[in-house]
Length: 274
View 1 (cartoon, rainbow, N blue to C red):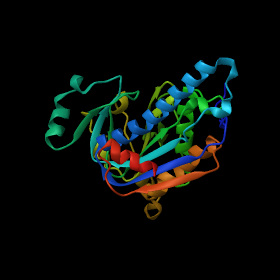
View 2: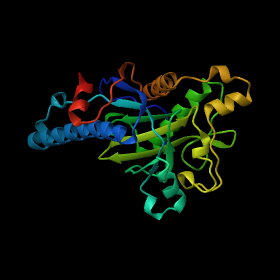
View 3: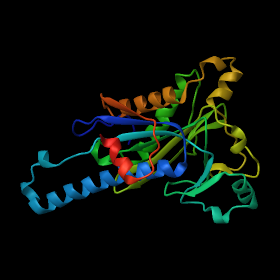
View 4: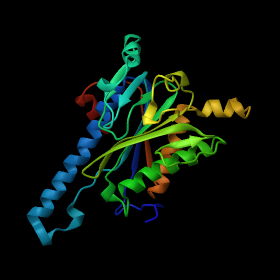
């Protein structure tokens, strides 16, 4: 089955939350879990209603939560996916930890990756079943395609390989790792914009389980083209990525929320809905 566009089964809006500043990784994890749990709770309510009313259900009675996209820059952090644990890694990681680098184990797919200043991270939180023919495989392909189109707007050519993610001139520029729980997505993608590449190109560190693979960034590639003056801001890049996601999902309306203050509790997460 080809993966192209995935129209929603009913009218939806996409809410884009832009979290300004450089934030702790665990803050981003708290926020995404809040939005994932909202989707899971609504799905539970709908399933209960379907079961209780059986064939008499009027599907207009079911409520649906709009999808969201959360965009961040994080403090320097290495994260481990399901396929690799930090406890199994070399002393190099322990040395970095003494320098103030954070280490977090996550529920996403994949192996070890890096997040830090100058890198855009986008977490789409959507119910795959709200869209026609949107399988998990097509969802990952849609993320890759969105990255390729976005960096294309910055005059760069992205491409995919047999490994998940996006490459530019033979070097990895975007990593993708997702978790799907009862059709609800979490985690997502990162793009190196003005990232300090020393964190990802150290020979003692294997990123994404790909030994020998080097990473690049939008600013590095534009410098090669003598176009450093057109490096996008993180906010502009985030808006471009989310715009591509909305187009692929055939959602016409994007509502943007700019968040300046830190979010440190579930109560503060609730305030994001106002």
